[in-house]
Figure 1 (tube, helix red, strand yellow):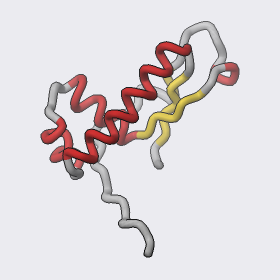
Figure 2 (cartoon, one colour):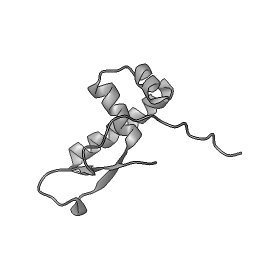
Figure 3 (spheres, helix red, strand yellow):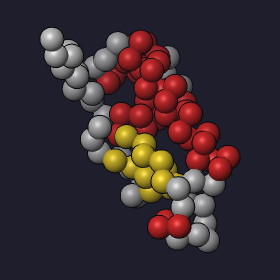
Amino acid sequence: MSPRPKKLRRCQGNFCGRAFKPTGTPLSELEQISLHRDELEALRLCDCEGMTQEEAGLSMGVSRGTIQRIITVARKKSAQALTEGSALVFVDEK
């Protein structure tokens, strides 16, 4: 039996470039952590726009549980990049 197909996730926010990295070090010399569009959108909605996970789920067309899983991964990646001096590289697809 194959896994259930992934629901399309509506993302309205835009990337502010190709990556976010510490200054002074070329991207090629840094550990790169992939941050997917849906992860960035969940962070934007919950942490910047102040939406609840339920509201963010409605906005993105997914359940609150899915938002919770997405945001947990996104926050871990962001914290890792900030504390270890890694680059967050934005990718469109999973």
